[in-house]
Image (cartoon, rainbow, N blue to C red; front, side, top):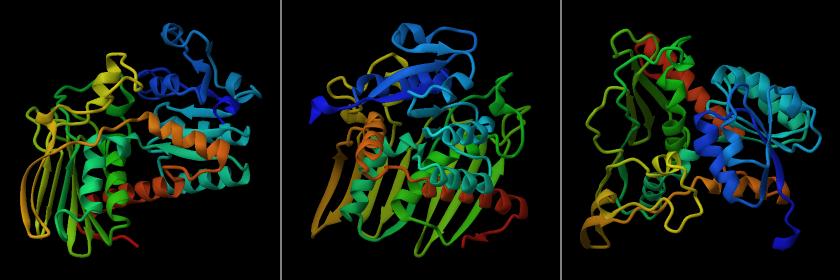
Length: 352
C-alpha cells in the first residue's frame, strides 16, 4: 500500500558532479527516499536543492547517526574501500560508485563485510539504464539480427588538455579511463553476454603530457564472436556508440544517452517523456526477420536512471532482487585487472 511506504533515510557522501547530476535528482523525485545528510566540506550548494538535508563536514556524522539507513559512497575511487567498509560495519546499506574497489581482493573483502553485517551493497551502474543500451538489449533478446558475430561499443569524449588538480589525471594504472569509464561498458557487455572466455587489451596515453590511460581498446572473446569496447579522450567527431552485426543484419546506434545533459540543466527524471530521444538519434536496423527485409529507424527505449533507486527500494524494503549484484561488479573489476595484464604482456589472457 502506497500510504504505508516508509522512505529510506539516505546520506550522500559528496556533492560534486555525481551527487548533483546523478544521485540527487533520482532521490529527489522518488518519495521512497529521504535525503537526510550530505557531506560538503566547503561549499553549501546542496542547500538550494535539498533544503531539508543537513550539511555535515565529516563522515563520522553519518556513521554515528542511527536514523541513516543508506549511505551513497560517491567519493573519488581511492576512498571507496574505506568508506564502504566503515558504513557497512556501522550497519548501513550502501551504494558505491564504480569501480567499487581498486582491486578484486578489496572487492571480495567488501562483499564479505556486507554479508557479515547483513546489509545490502550495490554498485551504481547507471549506464544499464541508458536508452541506447536498453534498445540493444531488446534487439538481442528478440534475436532480430540472427546469430551475433560482432559487437562494438564506444565511450568517447573530447578533452585534449590535462585537468590539473583532478585525481583522475594522476596516480597509478587504475586511475585513468580504464577504471573510470571502462566499468560502464564492461558491465554492459557482461549483462548482454556473460563472462568472456578470454581478454585482449591495448591501453595507451594519447594526450600531450598525459599521465594516465586515456585510450583503450578491449576485446572480450566469446564463442563465435568478439565484443570490442573502445574509449578515447581524443574523439572530437563522434562515431556510432553501438555497432552490432549478426548473420541476418546489423544495428547501428549513434548519439549518447540524453539523460546526463538533461540532468546537468537541473531537469528532473519525473518529467513527461524523460530520456526519450528525437527520431534523428534513433538507431538504424537493417535485417531479415522471418523472411521479411526491414531497413529503417528503431525507436530508442527511453532510459531512466531513477529506476536504479526504485529497484533498490524494493530490495531494501521488500527483499526484491537488486539490479546490480556485487558479484557482477567484482567480475567487472576482474576483467579490468585482466586488461592490465594483457596490455603489459601484450597477449590474450584466458579468463577463467
